[in-house]
Amino acid sequence: MPADLRSRESVVEAVHGVDVVVHAATVPYPEWPRFVPLFAENALAAAEASGATLVFPGNVYVYGRTRSRSVTEDHPQEPHTVKGRIRLDVERKLLHAHRDGRVDLVLPRYPDVYGPGGMHPDFLPVFEGALSGRPCRWPLDADALHEFILNDDAAEAMLKLIRTPAAHGRAVHVPGPHPIVSRDFIRLAYAAAGSGEPSVRVFGRGMYRLVGLFNSMARAAYEMAYLFDDPIRSMDRSIDRSREARIRRRHTRTACHGPWSGSEPIGQELNTAASS
Image 1 (cartoon, helix red, strand yellow):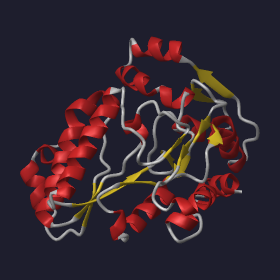
Image 2 (tube, rainbow, N blue to C red):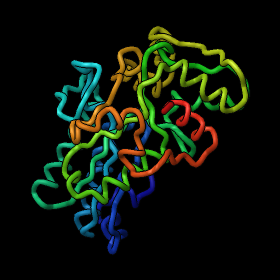
Image 3 (cartoon, rainbow, N blue to C red):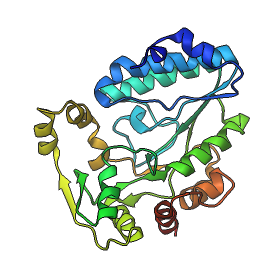
């Protein structure tokens, strides 16, 4: 890792005059315990020193196995995984800093993000397969409901929250268009790429464990496998529940004051199909 990412002082020095610090940096799962708290500490120091708003994109790891299929921001936070506990500890420290007046915090919480520019290794094979016309792989259960959001829509929602003072200092769910069966999401990707009906090769927990004997990434990812066979089906928003149905159907029309914003043709077709 470059030395300047390890130095709190160098990070603080680099951000004078910055209005917003977006902390979206991450590392491979095996390195989370060492680096994720350090990244958050540096981001907080930078935002505090510059007077900038700190944005920390969140996820559902902090909930652990949920008590209901539909989850709002006030759901108990009971992570049972190492990565969930790390995320929860980071969020609590940042929220505490906001309450103390040290920093202005924006905390959007997303479902699984996909799109150009980088995505989780579990989703990348879907789009590689769609573009090549070859089979793709999927973890555990391709017939379970899952929730996705295009990264362009996630970014636009983030900008909306930055401009909404009432949303600062608390976690705010940014749901996708609506939960969708994973196999149907894969079909949308293949159809948008003109590749026809996909062949989906599902790998189970046994394969996870076997590969984990030789691969540290697979070994570290195994504890998050519950998100694929026992997923959160819907990220509802406890803020403004009167518009809950419209949020779930339309997402960015409610959260971002605009239409679907995906810049890539595949993303546009996926979101158009998913929102219909």
